[in-house]
Length: 191
Image (cartoon, rainbow, N blue to C red; front, side):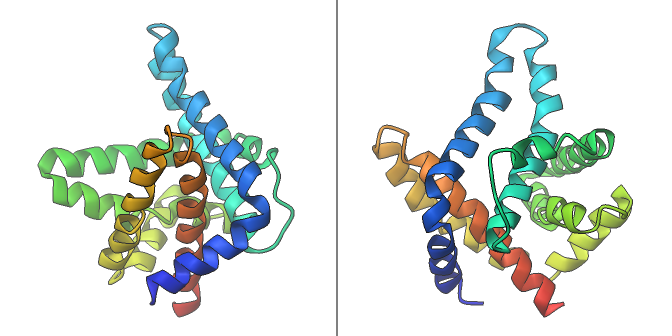
């Protein structure tokens, strides 16, 4: 897979959605980050919001990729299967944390292996949590290094976003998200 072409293709697809996509990423960041700053229960609230909002963002970027109507309401759609998405989020978080406790490398491998879980959940909501995780792991089998490389290719863009008074980050995040969706589609087609 040519990652530079994938990134270019993702940037082109995002062109007409960039402003709304940046706003959605900003809202996500505020809703997940702010509660932890408010009071002692804020960390718990942030944890409860993170999974459904991540699912909502995944819905939004999948819609852009498939040329379906994408809007800010997609962010709220992640709350519809609330219990299942919370369970998925906590299982992924626990596995990843466990991997990081062992050493950093196993944590990265686990995170990469489970990185397609939300997209699978959206496209196949009838699957159980276990089936979603297994399918994500199988889908990323043999591709984890390339997925990691794709993430690394965005680091210079994030650094540039920081230099632009952090505002630029909210324009890099949508591009990064859509590139991951694009790679997910590549894995699905390749399967």
